[in-house]
Length: 153
Ligand code: HEC
Image 1 (cartoon, protein in one colour):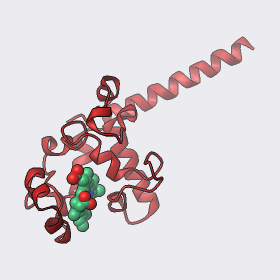
Image 2 (cartoon, helix red, strand yellow):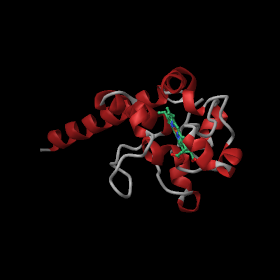
Image 3 (cartoon, helix red, strand yellow):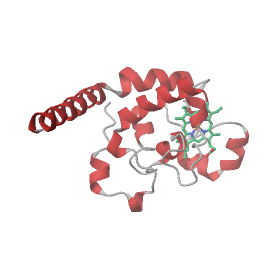
């Protein structure tokens, strides 16, 4: 019995170490940027307005299929941790963590079929950090969750 428990504990440790190692390797420059350029930059690139300007004319830009600018590491992490806390996660979640159980409205852009979308969601989730995948607003964000947001450049 004791051996079984010990083996089970070892297996859990090995698995979490493996996923920690995997997550640690996910960086903006190596993994997120290439995906971003392929799937998101067309509407969130250099030609897009910064969030302040976007918000002033939200409807106009949305009609033109122009989203707020997220064309660099700094401009993207602003939609993860602060000031637009949780925006990236709310929009990209597949429905497993959203309040209404529906996917966020940018989830569809992650891929042309469900397998590709799921694969890319796993990548973005690993980049943000499993414990940092937070869909709430700034006022609900606690320090532990913030610390779990890895977003390695
Ligand atoms: C075809 C154009 C298009 C593509 C491609 C696209 N988006 Fe968007 N996105 C928009 C528009 C337009 C808005 C603003 C309207 C809205 O809020 O839905 C937006 C809004 C957002 C927001 C919310 C920003 C805020 O106001 O807080 C996030 C986050 C986001 N997109 C992420 C992504 C990600 C990640 C991808 C790639 C997987 C992506 N988008 C691909 C057009 C696009």
